[in-house]
Structures are given as C-alpha cells and as structure tokens.
Image (cartoon, rainbow, N blue to C red; front, side):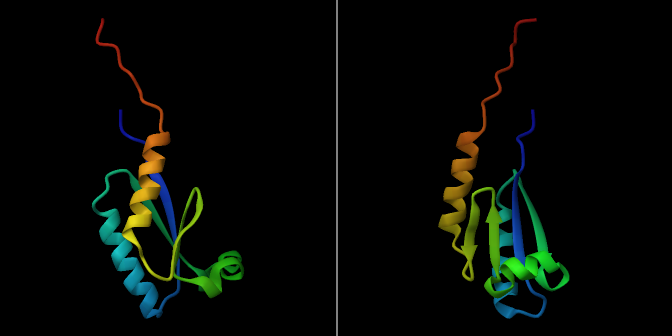
Length: 97
C-alpha cells in the first residue's frame, strides 16, 4: 500500500528573489522525500492568500500551520515530516491466505 502524501503549500510572489531562493531550497528538500505533495500559490493571483499572507512571503504551511517563514529551515521541515509520519496508522497485511 502506498503511503499517504503529506501536503505543503508554499505562498510566494513572482519576482521576489527571496521567494525564489526559498522555493528552490524547498523543492530540493521535497525532492528527497517520497511522500510529499507541494502546491505553490502566488499571492498576487489569489485575493484570499494575498490578504492573509501577502506581507509574509515566502511562507510554507502544512497541516500544523506555518512551518517556515522567510528563511527555509530544513530542520523544521524534517521535524514536521517526522511528526506526520509518526501520526500515520500502520497498516498490517495478513500473509495467511
């Protein structure tokens, strides 16, 4: 059975060099994980995201809320993913047929 993907949302802004650096670091980190889904939202094209996060980009959020803001910190992402993986139920399969 495949693992359930853990979802992340990166709030960013086109033309923001800090956002581009953050996105590159996050994408590289995500590339080392097999169970992540990353969605990227440009706050300038999403009125709700702009109102809520526009002044705080780059920002990556997970199911626990804000995970990293302005500066990508792999240790924070590692800790979040470890907590998410630990919270998943273990699926036992019977080999008795």
